[in-house]
Length: 281
Image (tube, rainbow, N blue to C red; front, side):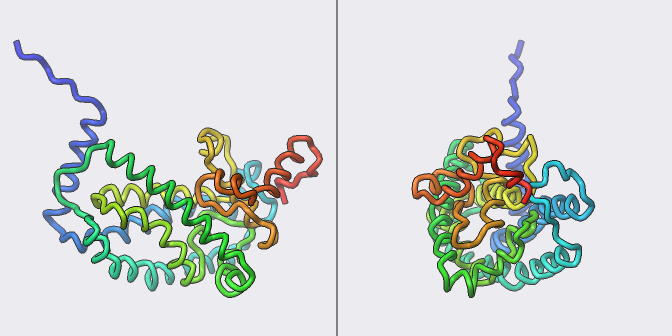
């Protein structure tokens, strides 16, 4: 009597991924997938994950979990959305097209077989660590007087952030800090599916950090060293010379270099009840 094979959940996911990739590479060129495909995926994930906090703020939903009392006007929110669409079409998409030869040279591929899960996870972890390190120093540089005035102040126009403000920035900053996101994949030449997974996770992370809401289920409540919305919201609501909290994902770089002292002092005061509602500035 033949022994029945046991298929684990990850086996089904792997089989589906293989079928999905086979369909894509049969119907589209690698250039199309790596450029237009990446752009469409980015836009879909970014706007679907970023719009909820915009509407939460606009209609006063989940106000108990809103970090700041202040809210943006509807017209100010719309201004952000329309400028983002322009930036993405005029900056992000061209950069994806121009950078494709570099990624291809470094080993990017879209063909089967897919890399083992262990390789995918190790690459994603490497990307997060490297991105956080590079972003920290780049972001800290943007808070020097000249760069802040002429470049980074655009991003800080929204002192009360909502999800979509995560990518609202001066075109020069988009290129400057965008390097932190692509340097890992450029060095390792991953499979396109790994690159897409990294992009999706990075977008979801930065949107959550700029959401303006700290929920009981927020990742920072469960993931050690993860900054999250409360950590980054502090960065937006204080003067640029005193903001600190420069990291993108984790908290250890700010702790090591002492750029989170203001935030930690505020949290300590909140815990002792002396802050007088600083959390709801």
